[in-house]
Each structure stands twice: as C-alpha cells, then as structure tokens.
Image 1 (cartoon, one colour):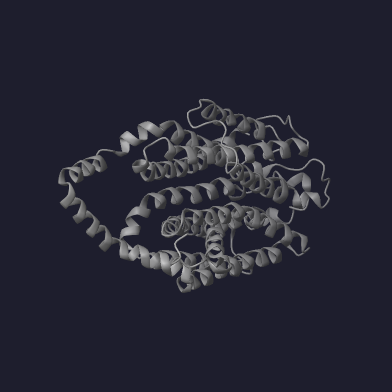
Image 2: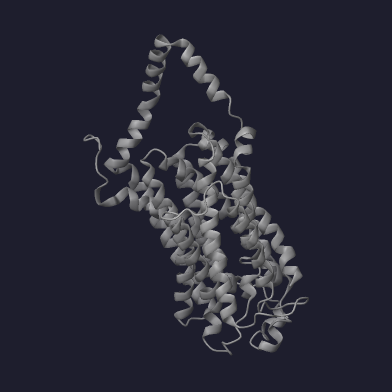
Length: 435
C-alpha cells in the first residue's frame, strides 16, 4: 500500500457506507413488511367490527385491502425503473451532496409523516392514496440515493462497494426483525406500528449523520482529493501520449468509440434476460401472493401473528442474503453454462407452488400444500435461488465483455434487473387473480 494513503481508522468509512447501504433499501422493506398495519387501516367501516371473527374475515376484505399488495409493489417498482434510467441525467445536473443528503432527508420526512398518520384517523380511500404516494416517493428517492452511493463508492478502493451491498442485503432482515419485535411488545397494532416507523426514522437519521461525518474522515478526503486532481493529470498524460505517438492515440480513440450498447448487449443478452426473468418471477409472487398465505397450525394462537413476519419476510430476506453471500466463495455454474439460465427458467415452478399453498381468500384453485411446512420449504428454496442465481447473473454479465465495456455492461444489467422488478409487479395482479 502507498505509504501516503491514510488508514481507514476504526473502519469508519466502511461503517458509514454500510449504514448508507442499509438506508437505500430499508424504506421499501419497512413499508412492505408492515402490510398487516396498512391493510387493517383499509377495512370498510361497516365490516371492521367483524374482523375478529375468523369465519367472516376472508369475505369482508374490501377492494382496497385485496389490491393493496399488488398496487404497492407496482408503485414501488415502476418509479425504481424510471429513476434508475434517469440517474445518468441527474448525475450531470445535480451535485452529489444534494442528491444523497436530499434523498435521505426526503425519505426521513416520509417516515415521519407515516408515523404521525398512525395516530390520525383517515377514511380508507384517502389513506390508500396517501400511502401509495409515499411509496412512490421513497422508491424514487431510494433509486437516486442508490445510484449516487455507488458512484461515490467508485472514488474508493473496490472493496468499499462490499459494505453497501451488505447493508442492502441486511435491510430486509432488519425490517422483518423490527416488525417481529413490534408484535412481541404486545401492543395494539397501531401502537406497535408507531414504534416500528419511529425505528425507521432513527435509522435514517443515523444515515444522515453518518453521511455528514464522511467528508471529515481523512481516508475519504484523500480519495476525494485524488479524484479532483485527476482531470489535470489526465490532460498532461494525453499530451505526452500525443507527442510520443499520435497515430496510437487515434487508434485508441477509435477503439473507445467502437463498442456500442447494441454490440455489448449481444454479448450479454442471455445474462440480461436471465436476471430480468429472475426478478419477474420473484416480485410476481413476493409479496403479492406469499403475504396472503395463512397458517393452518396456529389455531388462533400467537403463531398466527408471527407466521407472515417470520415465514414470509424474515425467511425470504435471510436466505436471499445467504444466496448472495455464497457467490463470494462459489460461482457454479460458469458464465458460459446453459445450466444457469435453465435453472432461472425452472424457478417459474414457484408460481404454481405458492398459488397452491393456503392462500386466503381464493376463488379458483384448490389448496394442495396446506401445512405450514410446505410454505416454509418453498420460501427457503425460492429466496436462496433468487439471491444466488440473480447474483451470479449480475457478476457474469460484465465478465462476458472486454474490460473497456464492463461499465456499460453493468449499466445494461442494472436496467434489466429494474425491468424485471417492474414486470413482476405488473404480473402480480394476474398471478393473484388466478388464485
């Protein structure tokens, strides 16, 4: 290591990037995990008094309750796709500090509003519209934050992308554990929801404070100043190259201009469509179908309260994270193997498997996998395969092209990942209706 490069004291920069990574996906996960609270606020006033009766609960769901998970997913994924595409434009027009600090502040304000609204009585329709507007906001700002954060990490050594990915991977687990703790408190659903959203406010506030501290750390300052001094150095290098061999420079320019997006896409289209298909299947079923699965062994006990937070959200996030983590030590099958896209196509089997679990209410299909253990087994395989196989695709895409084309290939892969999320959100309406 260069003796002039300062050390990252106490891993301060690493921890800040981890916190910021947590902040990018925490908002969406907190909203998604709180579906019990949101749907309880959408009950028709006339039927609300009867919700304690299990026999009538399924029949008394309002239209807004029935469509909440589908519309929520759509309102989350479409803005994510749009703002992922707009990131390159925003990068040129808006300063990095404004993009990151502004996005975090906006997300914090949305959570504060959400916590306040827990204590405010609203009719179901206005509450539904306000909730969907908030989901659009947090995912729009989340996409801007994510793109800006990875751009900022590009100033530092490559290993500093890892804490961002780790923070994002644990965001869902943190949200699920927070919901489980809120339920375990024994408070009424509205009181526990208030504490749950205040917890999110605290974490986002910590992320804002961490970002404010970042420029003051010597390690980050060194790389930031190095990046700012590069343009002048690059100009000098270019002049030297021009004097040495002008024809070599011209050939180099031709090589830089040759690769087009279409040419690069032709090399990685299999990986691009594979990651798109992976997330189409995942978001098409999770959470739109999986969150409506009911326990058959709870029998009115405590497990009924914990079944979805544990079996759906916690298990998905833990095993998805384990699948992503496995790619650090195992990358089978290889980047040119036909087995990888084949395995991703095979994941379509999870759609009918979840449909045939004890999803309530249902109108068309029978229940074949009623016991809780079936749903838990399917969820583990579903989550692990999503994390492992999708991560392989994201790793292999840039490796199938030349080094000079890797950045463009990564951008294409990110676009198709976002496209898969949006397509899955759209298909979730169909999948849920078929049940």
